[in-house]
Structure formats: C-alpha cells, structure tokens
Image (cartoon, rainbow, N blue to C red):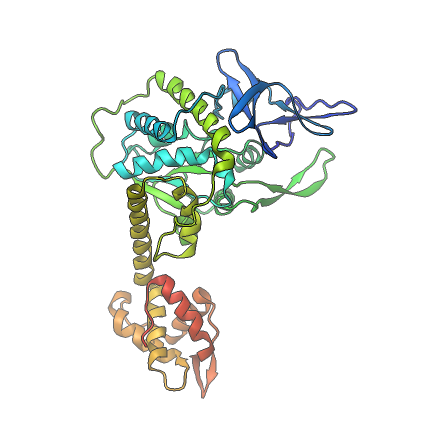
Length: 442
C-alpha cells in the first residue's frame, strides 16, 4: 500500500523527473516494502523483500518509471510517540509453530485469557501480518465490565500486531480515517461502546466496511484549493476492540471473535503493572513477524476445507481466512465448535425475540393455509396464543403487519376484506426462518 501525502512534513519533496512517495507499506508485484523504525537511533527506513524472504534495508525504492518510495520521517508524531508501533528490522522467525509458541508465551505472561482464546489470539496476531493476502477478515473483541482486563488484553495482543495504532472510543473520527487510509495496519480501539451519536455512527461505518477488501468509506473532504470533493478512505484491516456491551446490530456482531472478561478470577502470576521489558519483547516478536510476512505472504492461500458446517455463509466468510492458518486439526475443530456455539446462541436469541415470534407464527399459518395465503389475523392469533402473557395482553393485527413489513420486507394486501401475506412471500419467510433456526412445518 502506498500512502498518500496529507501533511507537509512527510518527506513529500518532488523532482522534475521522479515523484518521491512517503510509504508505510507496498506490495508491488513480487516485492514487499515495509517501513521500519529504530527506536534507539530514532531513524526510519524501508525493509524490502524481493526474493521470498531475502531482504535489504533501503532509503529509496524505485517501483515505477517515475515513482520512488521513501520512508516516513522518524519525526512523524504517530511514529515518534509510539501511537503506531513498527518493527525495527526483519529477524529470522524460525518455524511457524515456534513463532506461534513464542507469541502464546508472551500473551500468557501478560494477560489472562481462556486457553482456547489464547491460542486463537496467537493465530490472530500472525494473521494480521498477512491479512491483506485475503479478501475478508474477522475482528477480535473483549467484552466485559471495567476492571476485568480488557485494556490489558488490547495492550498485550495489540503490541504484536501488524502496524498497530491505539485509540479510544473518545477519539474523534477524522484521524482514525486518515491513519487507516495512510498507515493501514491494525486498529486497537478501547472503550468502543457505541451510544447513538454522529461520531459513533462513523466508527460503525469503519467496522462494517473494514472486514471486506475494496469497500471504502466515502466522505467529503476539503482539498488544498478549499474545494469539497468526495474521497474514498480505505478502512480494510484487522481490528481489536474492548467494550462493555455487545452491539445491537446483529450483522456487526457477526464480525467478531469475542472473549468475555471477568468470568473467573485473574491468575495470580499476571503482573499488576506491565514491566518495561515488555516493549523490548514485543519489538523482538514484531521483527520476527515482519520476516514471517516476507517469507509467507505470497504462499498464503485460502483453505477451501476450512468451512464450518451448519452456519450461515457470513460466518464462514469471516472465519475461513483465519482458520486457513490453523494447521492443528484439533485446534481448528475447537475453534469451529466455539463459533458454532456462538451462532446457535445468536439463532436462539433471534427465535426468542418479538420478530422471531411473529416469523414462527407466520410460517405456522402458511403451513395450515388452504389457499396459499396467510391472513394477518390468523398470524396474530398464533402469536398471542404463545406470547400474550409476555406482552401483558394480546397484540393487535396492525402490529403484526407492521413487524412483517418492516423487519422482513414482506408485502401484504387485502383479500376478501382481510389483510393477508400472499403465497408469493412464503419462500422469502422460509429462507429467513432458516437463518433464525425456525423450521417451517410441512
């Protein structure tokens, strides 16, 4: 990814012949370019891999007839302040299972995770370094009350991820858009609960669009001539989040692998404060992970066998890239079982909702229909027979019709003086019923 300049202090000088482009990362043919930062010398450079893992440290990389890639300035505030963490140089990563074991050891030392999620988190760290080899990706989330270790988990896992940058839910949205667009990498977002506000709605757009490559967020910006024009911000990339409550949007919920915090006592060996040595350990692992990217990026393929049976396609789209990295079949099975259980919980929640009750009643009426239509009044009777006590009395026919039209986009019309759901809508409701885990009676 070549970055676009938007500040004057980012080495954006030009000559008559060549355009010098400050760059964080770039995939150009079989060449990988990554920005590195030496925290001791306070210098930046470009690590360049052209031959399947062999690498050089360079200050200029010519990738096109008139384009020269150069590193961002080490004085860039995001780099100098440590807001964005970078490797300092590639270091031989050894073997994949050794790297994963060392990542897991690091995580185990500093954060208390359930055994399965600890392994999943180690693979997610690895995944972030080659995520752009895939077209879809999942997010990682920690859900629980304050003081239950969410922020610690973000700090420990995030410090190993690919170009992580740290923000909170209180951050303004504009810099998050710009950093994602220019730096890419992994967004680490703390206190990410989303009350209703314009700013939070913008963050939701980032989360909804960020799991699929080629789905930017369009916003209107002002250029240097003070002209307003649309701009496509790239938001694709891995994200780690901490929040107290799940999202109300079920589609957004489906994008997360979630660990609930505070469900058990914290291990006694977890340090209360993170030691200074953690930063050095994290840098050493980032250096090895950079080498892993250089060696494995072009070898990574989606494993078509990494599919979870019995779940909707959205979950497989999100999970398959990460599962493609998991060689341990037993671990893959455990992760699949966890995701299947979460999916079943989501289905149960749908079935138990008011919309689920209306849907079940409508399918039952269709199954008993003699003329193919489902009268709204019959659906209301079915619903009230099951749920009247839950709502303090019977619901009205008009409410049933409203739910069918707004929640399921079902058309209704009058037939012989009564509103009905026509037979043409039955197939649509049956398809929705399968997603809700509601079987249609034969």
